[in-house]
Length: 172
Length: 219
Image 1 (spheres, each protein chain N blue to C red):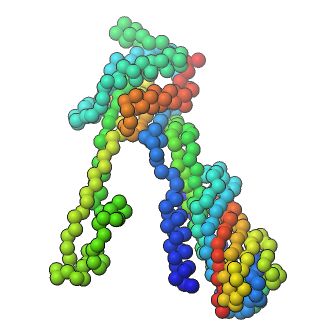
Image 2 (cartoon, each protein chain N blue to C red):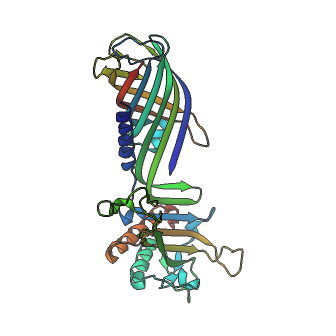
């Protein structure tokens, strides 16, 4: 049994990570992450296991020193193996179930940055640590993001907390 | 820098794809037990049953060849009888006493074959290498194309299904030549492993069929 979710949301995040150097309009940020996920609510009922399988890619373009807009693409695979009986009307079926949620998220993102140092806090919770102090900088960054996909196609809403670990580079 | 990120992307992708979960590791994981019961059937009204001492081969009955092994028929029928007894049913001889229900056990095996003739690059990497240019086009060859040996892989597996039907003679079937079961237990699985392992799985699955049908109790 598999569920595929494609979410296209406009995400407004009040604040997130900041890198060491001040940003300017036109600066670009590109990051890739290993994306883990912890399903919640309906998703947790269906596929309970914490997932270590996922990828994320993010592109941002700065509009001023503390604001950026961008696109975030993600894939999270949540799964659970369970042996149980499912009943529908006069039918009962018992067997090992391989349950999957393949969540593909496409997020339009806007970020507002707090501070000029290495840390930022937000609903999307993030930390960016520069790997070297150069203008054309690379950074290690991690983020915790709550994802919510609206009910569609007969499936109830799905939600999960994504834990992203990755690296990013900033270009001018 | 871009090359480095492309490499990282490829590594991430390979890592994620290679770790796709949910593979079947044992034949027992393929086992499925399904039960169906007629809506409104009053199972508490039934107390006696009769059951033939043989398992009907559905494949033969339909006019096909069969690979069904009948060596475990007695063990399977004994198990079904034990479960019915536990449910409160008493076996009677239908030639002298009309039973409340008739229990029929049937089975079928299906041989499945898959033929793979696409190029299995992975297992042969190591000794197969050495072609020039892109396969199948060989830029250094005068003909341009050549026909490598396609390793054809044939995989086969056999699945088996066991059906336990409970028929109430008092329930009128739509067709006079047919009988309508008021309960059906269907067990399906991959027939792999030793006879003992298969028999153990069948035994467990028969137990499961009755366990998930508590309404069969006569009281």
